Length: 189
Image 1: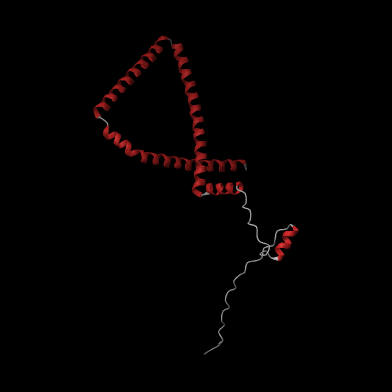
Image 2: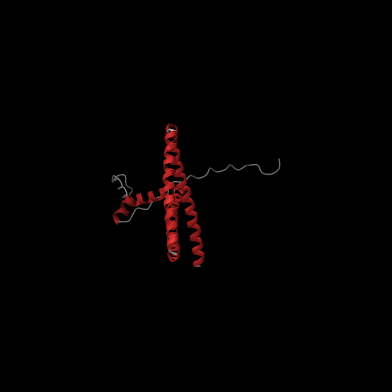
């Protein structure tokens, strides 16, 4: 039984995560659509020469950083073979730690998508509005009935009220269907 419940929970959580991802994608697309005219205008106003210079400058910076790291790694490899084994082991442990960290972050992200999906599905179904209505009914006190004049109150209601019991409701007048006219002639003609 527990396995079945786990499978159901996993399936529903996955479905809610998919709904949350769809809701998040819709939100991001909406943001992109609203920001697109500004970005296009900014792109039109950009000077191609200035952009080329900036890209070239960033490429030079990356090249110098890569060269520095490469010479550092080569220098480390040449110095000591034992250090190389230790460095490889450290890199593996760091990689494993990063994998665990990424898995934990992915699980947190999945849980956030599940929460967002539950909320989105409730909104799509209209359940969120029903919950708000239920909360409002629970919080708001019942309106006090307007005091009725003694002359207008029927005698049975007055007696029930005097006993401390609520008055019985009288059934509303019901409409009877109109009687169908029976055909007087029966038989052959």
